[in-house]
Image (cartoon, rainbow, N blue to C red; front, side, top):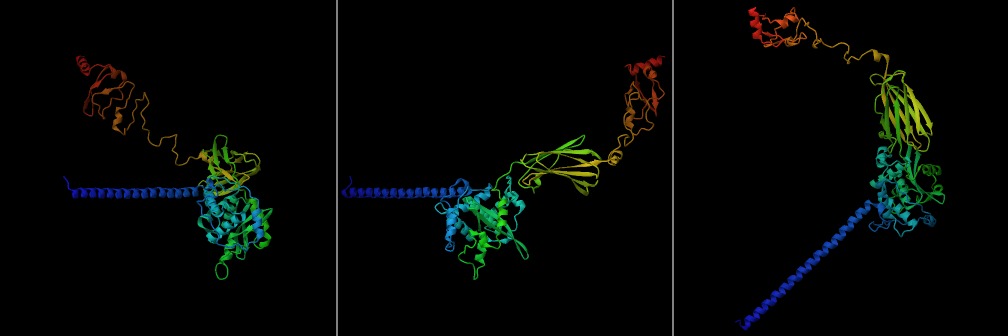
Length: 518
């Protein structure tokens, strides 16, 4: 039995164990609670960041008040902007939002739009905040040069715009928003499309200013409000700030913010504004243009087909007609073309390039140039000179799109038919001595046999065979057919004895014994 002290000690030990277990359980509980909380809260933050990234790449599916975009707050003061300008912009009637239809460009415009134009801002505040955003974030760079035509085509690949000017506007916008720097034209185009996204009737003006050493680009933005054009020139404003005496100004003067054309004077001409406005087509697209042509003469025909791509400067808008024509001097070549209808006049042209027999260029002539309202056309060409001719048959629609189908052929002359090329083998006479077998019935052998094996060739209609064929063995040329079938003779040719068998099937031994008995 345990004593009283032992009992007390055991109880104290049990109590300590239970207390320690409780503390351990409480510790594990707190640890796992903290861990699970961190996992769930971290997962939510990760999902939020992923959602932001997806929204940035799909601007057209998100709303303008998307809270994932940080609204830009202008660091500049607008004290110098007249109240009349603020009122004018607030009262401007907004139209439909305009997008280019080119995803990379529209994505970038939407990103700047959400970062500058908050839901609760007035129209004036949206325009000024976007203006200040470009002043603050972009740099001047006149070294970018003129738009690259191949890069414009690549950007607009698969989209046929009505206006090449629209394609240049989209390209300039893309270049500025991607590089965060550019010339005045890039500034003017980007700000115009940003205001178009808002709903204002804004235009990119591609003006050129004449200076003492030539000319320079002068691009800016014009907005039509209540029948009047107002100028926004972010590039000129930025340049004015940088050229300020004593360094860059901390605040713009807003000289070029919603200014009247007459107010600015030099460098801004209303006629230039209207000329640029007339070129803008709001990124409208064209119907499909496809050109097909049949080129033929009295005996042959070839066919070509080409579909117009984004630019008439692209080599992809021409096609070589497949097939081959055989044309003699004086022949008439007929061309018939069909273009997908554009509902307007089409310009048809036919040009011939002349080459000599070595394909050296000699001359070029325009054979045909006609404007018609028809989608079908016919023209002919008479082959009369040169050794080779390449025809260029083209059609240009009202939008300036051109498709070309070409074909090259040789013009055959009388000399070509009477004189054979040296490379062609003569067909009337064999090139070497005849080596064919004699026709059936020939019994005359060549005097000289070039090959010993030819002695086994058949000499008569009734063939003879030998047991031991030898290349030097032959029958007598004077022996008749009857003697060969009735008797068997032992002939010695050059000292060698040869036994022959007649064609009646008798054995050699029997024939020899019969002869000896006689």
